[in-house]
Image 1 (cartoon, rainbow, N blue to C red):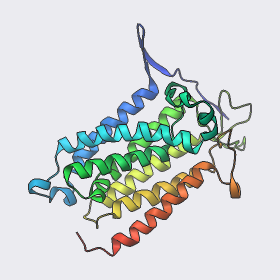
Image 2: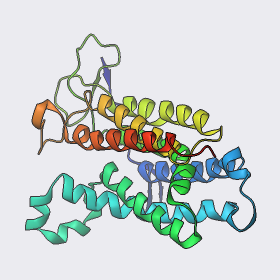
Image 3: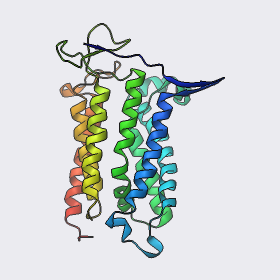
Image 4: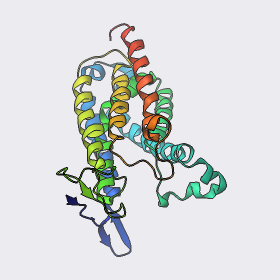
Length: 269
C-alpha cells in the first residue's frame, strides 16, 4: 500500500507571509477559467453574436469576479445549512470563522447561479446563455480544488482492500488503507467532465443544453465518487445508505434532465 506523502500545506514562506498550496490551486483555477473563457469566445455559439450583445474578454473577467463571490459566499452558507445547521445555530459567530474550513460545492454552485443571474440581468443577456458559456470552463477549477484536497491530506476515501495497488494511508485517518478519493474526483468531476463538456460545447447547441449536460454529468460523477469517499463524520450515511453529497447530487441530475428535455424542444440556435 502507499503512504500519503504528507506534503507541507505551505508552499512558500516569505517572512511572516505564508503561501499555501490550497491557495495556489485556487489561483490556478481562476487563471484556467480566464484562459478557457477567452477560448470559449471563439466557439461558434458566441463568436456569431454581433452588435451590442457581443461577448468580450471583459465579460470573462467580470464573470470570474462575480463567480468568486458566489463560490465563497454560497459555499460557506451551503456548508452551514447542509452540513452543520444545529452547531452554527448554537454558535452563530462561527459562521464567519472561515479559517476553520467548511465549504460546500453544492452551496457554491447555488451562489454562482445567483451571481450569474445578476450578471445576465446587468448585461441584458439570457441567463441560460451565460450559464452555457461558463459550464465548460468550470471542471478544471474543480480538478484544481481536488488536487488541493489531496495535498492537504483531507477528504480522504473509505477503507479500501489492502491488495488495491493504490490504497493509501492518510495521517489522521487511522491505520487502515483508504481510497485516494480526492484523485478519483479529480479524474471524474475534473478531467473527464471537462473533456466531455468542452467537446460537446464546441458545436452550436440549443440554449440550456450545455448547462443541462454539466448538471447531469457532475451529479452522476459526484454520486459515483461518493461511494469511495468517507462520509462526513458528524453525518455518516443517511437514508438508503447514501451520503449527504449523493443526496445533494440527485436534484442536480433531475434538474439537468428536465432542462435537457426543455432545451430539446426549443428552436435550434
